[in-house]
Amino acid sequence: MQEHEIVSAVKQTSGLESDDHAKDATQATLWVLGQRLAGGEPGDVASQLPAGVAEALPTIGEGETFGVEEFYRRVADQEGRGCTQDGAREHARAVVAALKAGISEGEFADLEAQLPNGYGDLLATGPVTEHR
Image 1 (cartoon, one colour):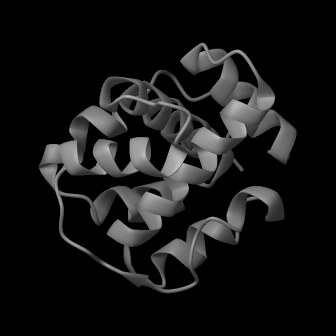
Image 2 (cartoon, rainbow, N blue to C red):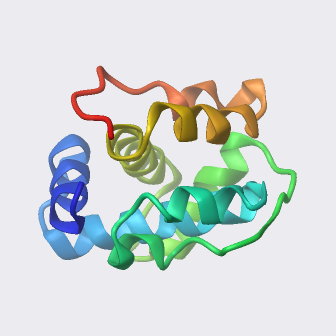
């Protein structure tokens, strides 16, 4: 997927009104995801994304341990724009759905394997329409 396709998917799924806000939500979600993932996983995910999206992910992740509610709180803080934790939840789920459609099934499975069972809410996405 190209950057504009990811941003458009996030905008449509989350109900955001502008591409800029959808891009901010995407960057915020990926930045927090990069904090949560360990080792080379963030870089592996980034390698399958367009540069403008991938730049939010570090090459190496620190594998910080925090639950999904903290994940949403961090996304809200990073996104700014008065984003609430509930809003961040919707935005992050839209980003993960776009991510699932934009990277290989194997890479998404690797990402999913690094997240504990409590992250089921974040990973609960609709049907995947595109895989590489």
